Length: 639
Image 1 (cartoon, one colour):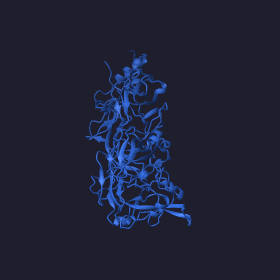
Image 2 (cartoon, one colour; image 1 turned 90 degrees about the vertical axis):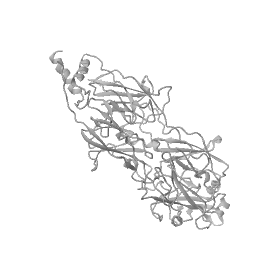
Image 3 (cartoon, rainbow, N blue to C red; image 1 turned 90 degrees about the horizontal axis):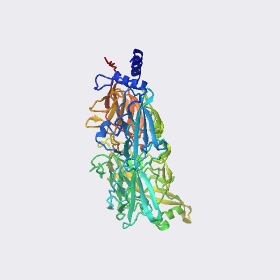
Image 4 (cartoon, rainbow, N blue to C red; image 1 turned 30 degrees about the horizontal axis):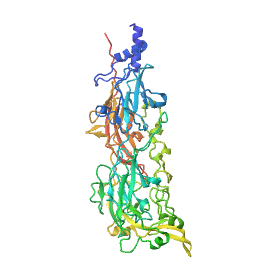
């Protein structure tokens, strides 16, 4: 090789090589980069990337996991010497036809994250295909060997209330990991296509449709229902292939309701299931709960009349005039045991249970004609109207209905690129924009059912410091009243709804039951080793091997889905205790790729519960320490 050509090769190597550090074995040397540059100058094609694979939590997941993933994975491959950039593609065809490519990007390292929700696609062996090639000195390498994989939806929920219902007025099911909500469809008469779908953020749903205005629902008639998990869908595929926001429907479940109890009204329990076992709170202190609820619970009660023996809750005249039965119920949640500081108002329900919903309350009749028809109907969703009152004649609105107090999601998740040390992690992503991938498509958040199109409600409950602090809940009966337009015609006029018992009286009689609510902390590590992968100075993607891993330039942080979280916030700081956020990212996924400068860094992750009024932030994970190594150069010449 001539001296002039050698210096050209050396200059190219220095320009395109990633610095190597002596502290890592097999560090890339300039002589290796020079060899690639020499091949490029000679017209030879650079070598194709090897060992392309997908992973969820750490890069070495591939040694334990098959080619099947429950959610969109990240991808890594062996670094090609001299490559400063790669071209990565995802397709539903192994031939990578243009109309089958759903995502492409040009990452600057041997790792790619996909910030969109990929559709679930079924194939005989594999339904998804990935490939990558290196760009060395402007020349593309051959494509890598195709990596095939499957994206399969999680299993459908299982019925927790088969046969005779142990929690009358409420159906419950097992949770699905990664679900952000659940759709429930009640099958009134499937042969005649009579059904209704509702959505909830927890693992239970009350049977208000079956009971309201006809709460002597016959116990011999079974309730048929199905449920499916809902996931957050973000971004759009390059070829416009749709991504559904839900998993498969469960089997058709059958639940039988026991006879309706018309005795004295008393609360029974708050109940939830966020894991493998139920959390049950059935006393003023919250006992015998195994801990606080991880999700907003359902509330179970029994009886129909007030606590003093009077026939509070009966509506004999209304029943005679309109053919409907009473009572309706209000569940109230307070932060004190005197039941004064009210923080949650339930929808009006006729069932002996209440579970908050993301869909609206029942569309209650507002006049005598509507009330007369209600006894033979399963009511649609809509509005309770503007005439709902407490026993003290205060106007009230069900929690989560529009009243100007809800949180604005765009404000709650603002600062998606709030980086004091910002550097790009990808270049030329083709698919969804980074902002759309981070915040999601607002138009997709609407819930569309046969009842109408609705925005999800914000009627969740905030965390409390259980067991030293707790919520207190109780239930009161309510009845419809008609305000006649003409006293001579008592069936025509406006219908109002009013409680007939004060919640303070229920609590004073020992009918205020305690419970706790504490969100799940995001899991960012296992056995003390964080779920993080990154670049070594040799340009290889490696996973964390200890509690404080070291990387060069880029990292992919990951975590397990947290129950109740709709999205996630990731923050980066230089200090652990005197925390000062220098980078702040939001994502609906469970992975994030970021570029960090050299030195010590800490990161933490928390879920965001967008059903909460106000601040949606859940509990932070413990900070994870990272060390980003500074670049050092070593030039090796050949004798």
